[in-house]
Amino acid sequence: MVIVKTSTGEKHHIVITPVNTNDYKTITKKRYFFDWKKENIFEVYKLHLINSNDILGLISLQRIPTEWRVHVRLLTVSVENQGKHKEFANIAGNLLAHAAKIAISEYAELACVSLRPKTEIAKHYMEKYHMIATGLTLSIEVPEILNLINRFDHD
Amino acid sequence: MTKAYRNSNTDPEFGVDSRYPSKTAYQSEATALMEARLERMINMSKDQVIRAKLMQLKFKMEEFIKQPVYEQHYFFSEFLQSYVDIIYSKRTVFAKDIGTTPVKLSQIINNHRPPQDDFILKLMIHSERIYKDVCEFQKEIWYQVYFHEKLCNTMSTQQEWKPKLEQEVYVSEPIVKYGENKK
Image (tube, rainbow over all chains, first blue to last red; front, side):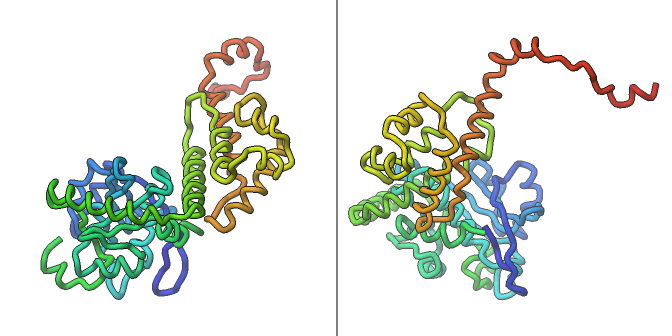
C-alpha cells in the first residue's frame, strides 16, 4: 500500500498495524483531533511509513459479526496531512481499504464497511469511495468494496 | 475536536466521528441498513460472490504466513480445498485442468499424500490466471503456505521428535563460549 507525497508525486510504502499501549503516549488530541485513549477498548490501527514510527493516520473499528459488518467508529489523518497543503495524500483511503480488507477477510461476499459521518461530509465519501447512504449510515459492499481494496491494496 | 476547528476545516478527510450517539440510534440504523443490504444482496451475481470469496482466501493465506501457528492443522490442503470449491462445481474438472487425477487431488486435499513440486507449480500457474482479473496475487504464496505449515507443525511437535533425535546428534568440535578463550 502506498501514499503519495503531494509536493513531488512520489509514492511511499506504508503499513497499517494495531496501535499498542505505548503509542497512546504520542497520540495527542492536538495532532489527531480526537481523544483516542478512549478508543483503546476497540480495534485501533495506525498508518505509518515503512521504517518510521510517526503515525500519519488512525482508524478505530468495531466488528459486528451478526451483521457481517465492520463499522468505522473514528478516522483521522494527522494535522499536517489535512487541508490544501497536506504532506501526503491517500491516507484516509488506505485506512478505509484496511477496514474493507478486514470485512472481506471475515465475511467474504456478505462484507460491509459502514460509516456515520456528519451530513456535510457524507457527500464526499459517497463520491470518492462510492459509499451508499441508508438514512444516516454510509456503507460499502460487494462489488464496490472489492474495487476500493484494489484501488489501494497494491504497491 | 473543537467546534471552532471543525467549522474552520474544509477537508472532509480530516476526521470522521462515526460513533453512534445511543444504543437506540444504533439499533434503528442497523435495522434499516440490514434491510437495504438484503435487498441489494438479491442482485449480487455469482461472479461477484466468487471474486469476494477469492479475495477472502488470499487474505486468509496472507494472514497465515505472517505469524507462527503452533497447532497441528493442515492449512495448505484447507486453502487448496477452498480454492477449488470456490471456482469449480466439480473437483474432477479442476484435476483435469491442472493435469492430475481426481484421486491424487483428493489425496492431497484429504492429507493422504503431500503435494509434489509439479502439483504446486501448476497450482501457481492456475491461480495466477484466475486472480489476474480479481486482485493482486503473489502466486508463490502456495509454497509459502506449504512450508510455513511444515515449519509450524515441526515446531509444535518438538516434544515428540526432539528427545529421540537429541541422542543421535553430537557436537565433536564445539565453539568456545564467547570470552572464555581469553582466560
